[in-house]
Length: 223
Image (cartoon, rainbow, N blue to C red):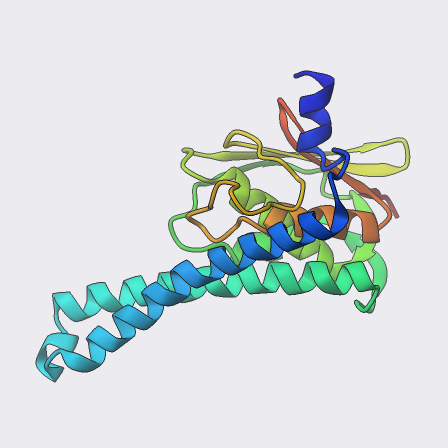
């Protein structure tokens, strides 16, 4: 990849104007939330209108599944957006502690939705890090979810390098890490804001996040 591409992927491109970029980003957030929310409201209204006997049948089950998926997308989008805002303003109370990476990863994978592709792991059982448990769990869950979009499996490899734990997650083609703006591609999983949130999580934990040809590389201080 060219130097310019690397800068864009890693959220390091020069801003054309902070105010306009912020406005375009909020426009993107509003658009991403509005679409699944509209779908959820539409399916919920249909469920109230169809006969009660049909609600328990195939049609009702289909509408309920669509509604649940849409609400799940809205929840993910809002959680990522609000977490990013809290980290930007320094309002998130960090609680760093010594953690075993393999244990935090197991908790993160349990939160993935049913049907997510399998995750092939290579994690040293004794690899310990110093981090906020909930933030690290959110970061790992988000990276695996983004890397698992429309691929048969996700690969996660962790190692200790120079006093830091490095976690490489690969699968789907990498996406840019910068805050998406109006006109940028949407995300069918509701994960359009996950990478910007994880970028902030990594910085708050004293590490970093990079995107490259091999996947997403999350680095955090080792314990």
